[in-house]
Length: 136
Image (cartoon, rainbow, N blue to C red; front, side, top):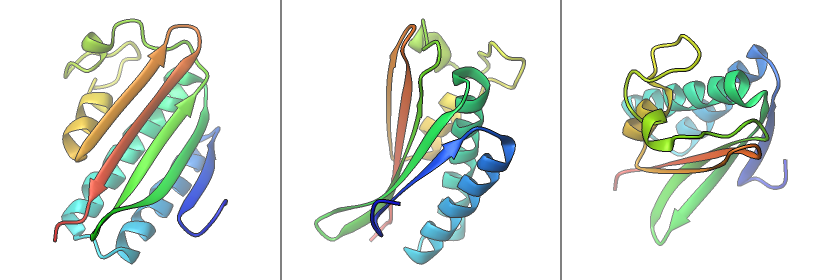
């Protein structure tokens, strides 16, 4: 943990996914997010953490408390050094999967968050960052 506004957690096992879910939920509770927004972000975090494990071979998650003026929120970044995503447009389509899942991980996380960024390079890895802002 670097400071009270940031936390880095490893992603090496299913137990790590559970720890990330718990940490995200606690941070959202502490920031006063509604139960609906908590559920959205915990779901998105779970999907992205599982993708990091399954397709990226593991990595790490970064939880960051963010602010912009009077706005408060949480950003989550999932980083791996895996094979990268060859076709981002295809990977973001509902139903597309290379691993036998439902194919809703990336597209679902994008819908459940307020901001979504994906950086990937074939052979070098992928970083997915999502942000949720607390409504005024």
